[in-house]
Image (cartoon, rainbow, N blue to C red; front, side, top):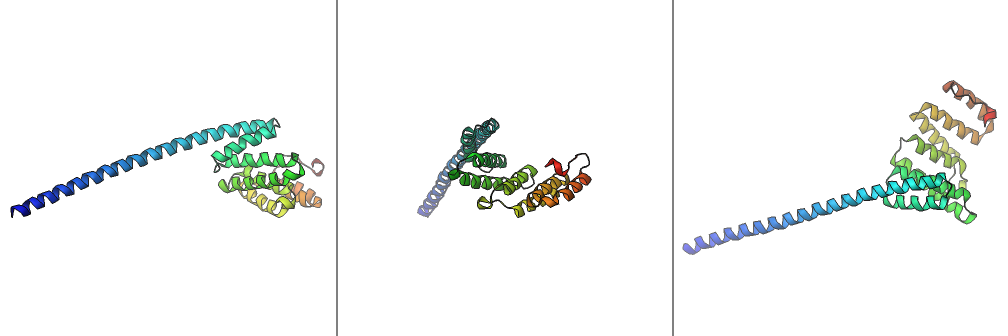
Length: 205
């Protein structure tokens, strides 16, 4: 009987020791997880700060027509924050400029990268009119071989119209003028009705 009692006591002690050890391990694992999360959060904030700084430098370089510098900084920014729509849009603008000024061997590659970034900016922030205008402008200006498309531009113009009547009319004018000069006058009249404060006529284009 005494042996049974001692065995039971020993079993209880062993159980509590195991619980204590397990709790200690769990606590240690939780601390490690918290530390890792803290480090990840710090790295994320540092990346965001650096990406915004690179974005600003890239836009300054673009405004000063320093395209190689603009390309360098926006590449840094997009690597750090690929989910930032503002960075994607700036990347699209800069690569569009590179496509226009680049040689025949690089222009197509630059244009395709520009299109990808414009699309991504719109995907990330679908109600942003400026991003839709940028993508629409690409579709209108680019050759079909690198993604240009009047029909896709018109779809975007319709989306812009749903978001903002005035900007939508302007977008549709741009699309239809690109497609057919005979549509110029009707759309000028439509624009005058929608936005009487802005005076335009066929000779303005």
